[in-house]
Length: 336
Image (cartoon, rainbow, N blue to C red; front, side, top):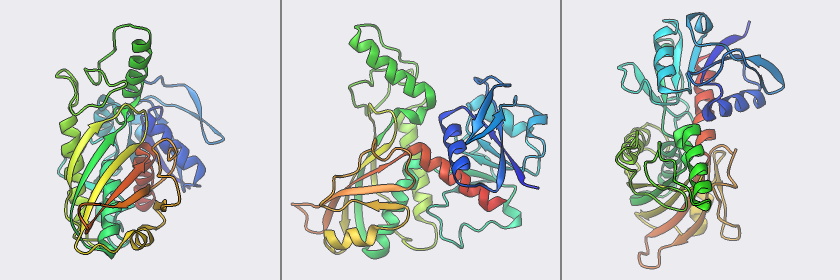
């Protein structure tokens, strides 16, 4: 009998990404769709080609689930944490359980093989999926460090509106339409104009500050860089998070100074691996739009710094929703 896994927030952007991965990767478990507060239970939908009914959030709908994926609203996630079976593993994509004493930060794409093995004592822990920007940067920096030790790095992180879920995407869309129609702007998420704009800070009434996200990325990245295994010891970069007027996908502009610069060709050769696509100098640099729906990260635009012989510039992109979802599904597979 196949194990059952409950997905709370099945209609959220993260929930739909998880459903897509499960439907296209022959997952060895059955996905039970659970409505978050803003979703309607009883709706008939699909997981791949199979019809599926969205259940209401309650003790009965979570009963018997070996794992519970949290991808819904803060209220629904808190309720699911209270109602989940004591023996069920929690896989949290929204940081709702990040402060719990039994929470463990997870990123299977970054973890070494020995580090990612789950023993019996860990099966009931809370597994918090690391911030997708931290996962992307940890993949990049650890891979560089493995071949060519890094002295220091400075990275600008450009965040998409979809990091705030459907509400963020709809607000950016609404602002764009309103600006072109000379109407007042919606501002519930960002509390300032994001459309046609770059933000170093949100408005004072924004429910979540940009600084809070920046600190979370830095905190998660420090943990991932310290994991044992290949690429261990990469120094934490200086980070600056900027809100970009894009719907999906992170972009990163990275300046990296090496102990000894090996040259662009050697860097490109050393970076390439299953979860890192490298675009050489003859190719166009990757874009967040072109990388939509792709796992891992894409790196390109690699160029030496004209003023610092031991440093190079890099351009990275990653689909934030896909990166978080594929790591969450990987954790579930390990647990089961």
